[in-house]
Length: 334
Ligand SMILES: Cc1cc2nc3c(=O)[nH]c(=O)nc-3n(C[C@H](O)[C@H](O)[C@H](O)COP(=O)(O)O)c2cc1C
Image (spheres, helix red, strand yellow):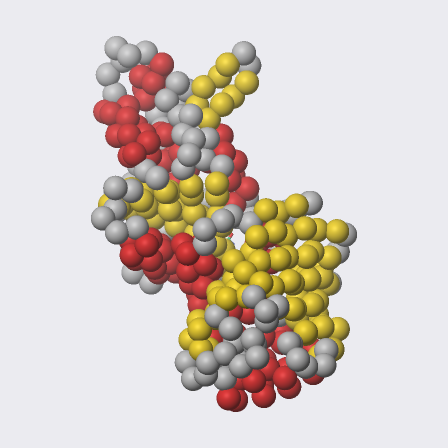
């Protein structure tokens, strides 16, 4: 039996965007891992106290009495029992909620979750995976998010280094932006749960680069399932090249828009999922290869375009507006 440890840090019980996604992740995870259990820590309804000097002394001296040390022991037992850690955490004033920081102050403990050997630190919670679901009101720039870097670092410090981030942005902007971000994030979660292999990122990718490329992939799937050619075109660079089997190369965003409008007027997609295997960066370009799975609502495979499983290659370009698709190609013979 597997265990999912879910931690919600939003102060909001209702109307919380991160909780919409931690709920979604939990449901999908349980259907993917039947007969598993979920331990739920809601830091809003059951806050962890800030770490006190008595608690720290009790961590180091077995005879010091401390109810917080008992809480810390319980939290560490929960963490040790978990196969997968799910954290829903909004950005509060450029960083993580203090309730979540208080949680980490209770579970990062020498000898229990990390150790120091000959001056080297080593995490003790190996073999676990984590998914971070973050949300923010504005749209991000690489320099004003002190949360994701911290969460990655502290989890790695205690030995959890298989970490995926699902980032919701623009939650305080208009309704359309918010709905689009939630929908893309759900696509990303579907992919995370169903994938069998983690992609290899080769070359220099910042956290922000990875988020943007993951967002493009999820945004493309979302646009295709919604039949939204405009949303699809917005993910592409001006001189996008689209290689559709048995057709001439389609060059440029306008041409792509027309081609996708024509496609979506007849073809309806029930699902569209990508499983990237390898992403390599060279300067302002990144090449991704992977496998995609497509199910149609109203058509069966015609000439490979709509075949259920095929390999694909993407080229992404870093433009002044951020990463965009520069070339899209799939192989109909797979
Ligand atoms: C106290 C507080 C501080 C916030 N600080 C930021 C911030 O620094 N940057 C930002 O983009 N959004 C900020 N926001 C917006 C939240 O990140 C956003 O509303 C998010 O959706 C909240 O998560 P939730 O929907 O799960 O509650 C802040 C919100 C609150 C309540």
